[in-house]
Image (cartoon, rainbow, N blue to C red):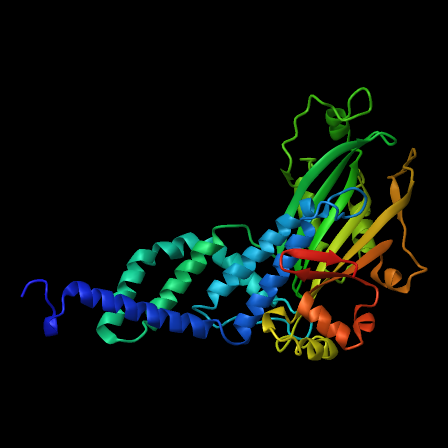
Length: 411
């Protein structure tokens, strides 16, 4: 009979029951997918990055001087969050995902490289995969026919979601090229002053890092263009910030190459600033800040600090059993040796960078100053505090406790 299936059941009812079976099987699959250490890791790191976003969104949080930290760092945090969303989708069709469990707690460098490579081929690969609606329809038909979950189709769907996600937003690449985000004039020196930012994912130490530099430019072309007769920024020059790369077009390509070669965590900020000063005679780095994100600790997953992990394991809700740390390092110029112009040779102006030798850790880092921060959920902070070792664990860290959508600092 038309409109009837075997047993007298209408095709509409068959489809409705098949839809219920599909949903039940899909829910079972998703429940299974949300269990285990990999899923716990993603939930924990996403909660940590979300908490950091809340902290940085506070306009009172500064990155040295009067610069709002959020205005600079949130763009790079968005890149990192996008990368983690991509990695989470990627494990739906490949098992190749590893983190640095004993060191930083972040994904190993190979994962970063794979995202970068896949980003370039995403459009071509997507063209070879059926669209999402077609895959879902085929999955439903497979369940109706076979009464089991279509693993191969689910893998195909996961790959499509991954390739779509990787094209949605910018990722945290091995090197995020420089941008000029602020331009002014130092009225004392008469030079244009640019704030330039870039980021590096250090492969050896698996650490994401953001750099912020205040650089004066004594190039004739930039001085003529940007400095008005009154010694202030020329109001007739429109600068559509942020500008990709160093503002000086004659040095932009060389500067990109420089940061790519001088971004490793093993290089101290003082070494990087000194190298910049030597390599670019007309660039004068007055301050260089580096924000090093990590280590990240997660109970039952990371092994980078046995005592912290043991205490975090007491937290009742695994999603709250984590601790995120970061360090802000700064080196600044305390004086400038003026340029010497001679008949046979000339010496460019050189910076004298201050290293705080009275602080052993600052001297070891090669910085003028530093700040160490720790972000922890309220439940985890209570466990650390109850252990009686909170003071020893946090030491000279500035502690920020997240509860819901609020972050309380300096507890």
